[in-house]
Amino acid sequence: MTRSLGAAVAALLLFALAACSGLPMTGPVNPGIEPGEEPPTPDFFYLPEGPQPGASPEDIVRGFIEAGTGPADNWATARLFLSTSLAEAWDPTAGVTIDDRGDRTYADPTTNQVSLTVEADATVSAAGAYETGGSGVTMLDFRLAQRDDGEWRITEAPDGIVLGTDQFPNVYGEYSLMYFDPSWTYLVPDVRWFPTINAPTWISDALVGGSPSPWLAEAVVSAIPESVTLSRPSVPVSGGVADIDLSPSALGLEQDGVDRIYTQLQASLASAGVTDVRLTADSTPLSADTVSVRSTRVATSPLVLTAEGFGFLSGDELTPIEGLSSAMTQVDAAAVQVAPDRDAAAVRTSGGAVVRVTADGEVLLVDERAGLLDPSIDPRGYVWSVPAQNPGGLRATGEDGVPLEISEAFPEAAELAAFAVSRDGARLAAIVSSNGRSGIWIAGIVRDADGAPLRLTDPFELGPITGSGLSLAWLDDTTVAAVTRSGTDLTLVEQVVGGAAVSGAAPSGTVSVAGANTDASVRLRSDEGLLYVRRGANWEQTASEILVLATQQGSPAGP
Image (cartoon, rainbow, N blue to C red):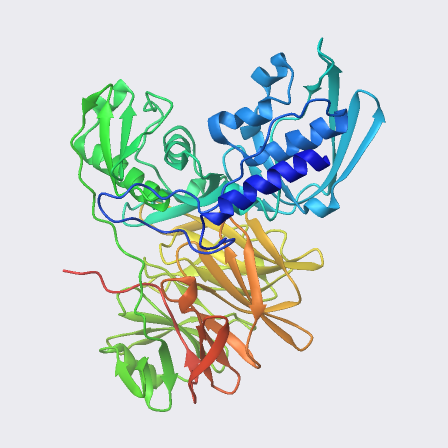
């Protein structure tokens, strides 16, 4: 960047910052706004400048890269650095390379050629899918030509933009496209990243005109048929209400189909601050209501096993679960996950076997293979089990006691350290060791028409971990947490399913993790039975003598 361009951009950034109370770089997406309010605008935005008179070829390329921070009017400022023909052809939405700006290297081997070397920390696809890492060091080549007035402009450039890790969160936002599980019971989020400017348009276009992420596609369904498209290229929002006009084919849909489309759109746009959706088809109003979906929220109190029994802990009081708490006295539990209706639990005993404990007092043997990991129970009542050293031996055992072999699960994995089925039953996350490295992986669960698990989709690595994994749990619908150990260092990794990870030190002796409804409500248990909860940036001990920190798969459905 030239001195004049850098000073101008810095001045504009300072002006934008002056109107802000702070600069949030990370954090949860606000799920909604109050009625009558407009969708939120970013607290911070870049105002890149166009080409400066007399700028050299390298200055032009530097300015063009910096102008990637300004998506307004389809990156109008960035196009000013391009020749007339390239300005029309260049596609900034082809993808994003996210890098450390300090590691960029510019070179100009000839007068009319500039090369930029970048090393991607992450990438975002044209569909908004985030992937950690990249193709290593990449060289981007630019060719330039002088106009009749002597000013340089770029005539050849790769599609897409390059953003620094510090810039990306202020240009792009995290949004969830919402699909249904195959039973139409749950909404399943598919996290995407789009420019924060005109986010409702990006979200609607991706949901109506796109498809689920490849790793998730076979595990979810959409109510939006391929014949239905957006009839106009933008989604205006007024008073928190998004106006979405669908193609005429939507007029022929059954009412339950329209209601499900409305539900998907409303839930997806809520992550952009939209409170309601007004649907039309070819400008004809469509009547629609939200369909009932089951919540994945869990009780806010920790669910624990102590010498006094099994139940929800509040202060010094332990509230038992009717039927299930008394049934738990029949087993010596080392790990527990409770079903959404709290009528059953998947338990790994201190002897290593996996059993199903029911609220009516039954204890049913599920799996007694050696080296079993902590089990998981899904909304259909299937108990999932797998030996750490045999990832391909994943099983799901139904209430009838018949084990189903989940074919080709994690084919490239050498070992699993922990796993957990999501509360919606559509996804399975695991800490996987493969090719000498460990990471958090995700896969979709493919089921038959009756809801029985058949197989996993091709797994997708969300991000690497350092050291070995100890425990894994879903914190909410879009975030999993893993406790890892490297030497004597214990770390809590909070990984967005389709985004970046945040890591921080865990208390001494941490061995297990449990989530609640937000990433702020994570709880940890130590090998000495101490229970910790996060208070700001610190961990506060809230209880002791905890034998097991259980996880929950939901809460009983209302009447």
